[in-house]
Length: 143
Image 1 (cartoon, rainbow, N blue to C red):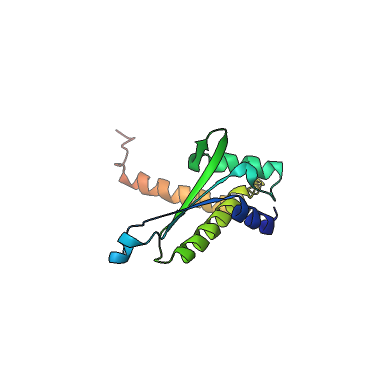
Image 2 (image 1 turned 30 degrees about the horizontal axis):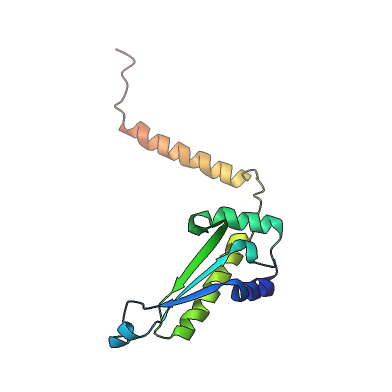
């Protein structure tokens, strides 16, 4: 995965929309379009191999919206009162999301439990069994 190529392709292929955002800001909120919405197609991204692209489609399936024949990823940012800062945050969020989603998970290597862990488990079972045995009334075998 080439992160710098992904960063550059996000900036080149994304459609940027500005709108009014809610939240703090007083009258500024009602006048200035500070909310940033990025839209870009996953097919337009450079720097991903086929496995990573397939992994992206699978892991981001719930966040993708269909626009014609293409799957578009939509990311919005409206935390700040500055349009420029919101734009940079949206780009950073898109990059982080893509990098985290495209990363292949490590394969789990099964291991056998250690001798100490087996003994600890058996001791715990014996103690728990003793507690439960103490709750039972004594048996009368002689009568």
